[in-house]
Each structure stands twice: as structure tokens, then as C-alpha cells.
Image (cartoon, rainbow, N blue to C red):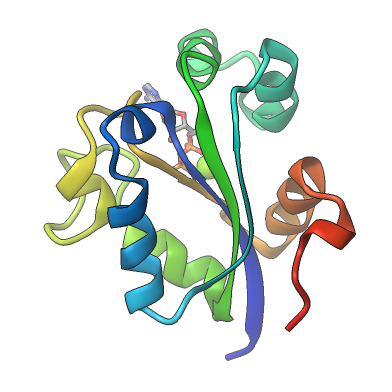
Length: 141
Ligand code: ADP
Ligand code: MG
């Protein structure tokens, strides 16, 4: 167990449903703390660079179209095992497979519009946090 930071994105579907607060409450109730956050409307280049690992996959074009369709709330979460804990709270990528009580089961509509992103490893957490935040924008508690 160690204190980690992870990148979380509240995707356009959830922002447009006005449930940013409900999703952040899930994190706060489970020991994850906000140490950075901002609302952004991503450009194609912003989203393409962020999702570079998925370039060439069948869902890539739709993913970029969706992630640029409206504002997103991008945040850095900190806490014990934050990377794994965030993934557990999010639930399966496909909301129909996600366990009840997870964010995607409770708030997402489809595998495309699935409410949240979360870093999947220590390496991606570091890359993704640096992608969206300058060091001085992230609180060091
Ligand atoms: P996760 O967001 O759970 O880490 P991935 O990294 O595999 O999932 O995929 C990134 C995003 O691409 C997913 O959150 C989802 O919005 C979209 N996606 C993944 N797989 C599919 C798929 N088979 N069909 C449509 N969209 C997908
Ligand atoms: Mg992923």
C-alpha cells in the first residue's frame, strides 16, 4: 500500500448530465482526495495525444469525436492505492458489465459514453498527469 496520484476525467456525457459533484463524492467517500482539477473542452489534438495508445483501434475515431464533443472535468486524485482504487470505483469499461454501485454501472449509458477515465498503471498515471497539469498546478500535501 502506498500513497499514489492518478488522473481521472469526468467525460462529456457525465458533465452534460450535471453529475460532476455526484462522481467526485464517490471519490471523496472512498478516501481519494482532489489535488488538482479543471474544466476543459479538448481539441482533436488534445484528445489524440492523450489516447495515443488506442490509435488505429476500431473505436479510436469515435472515441476522439466523443471526448471532444463537450467539456470534460480533469482531475488528479490522491490516496492509498489511488490507481487501483479509482479503477474499482469506475467499474468495467462496458457499463452493462460493470458491477452495481460502480460509477459506470450507475451513471454511464454505453461503452462510448462511459462517464469516466482513470489511469490504468503507475506509468500511465505519471504520463497522463503531466499531459494535463504543470507541476505547480498539483497540490503536494
Ligand atoms: P478504460 O477507459 O476502461 O481504461 P480503454 O483504455 O480500453 O478503457 O479504452 C478507452 C476508452 O475507449 C473507453 O473508456 C471507451 O470509452 C472506449 N472504448 C474502449 N473499448 C471500446 C469498444 N470496444 N467500443 C467502443 N468504445 C470503446
Ligand atoms: Mg484505459
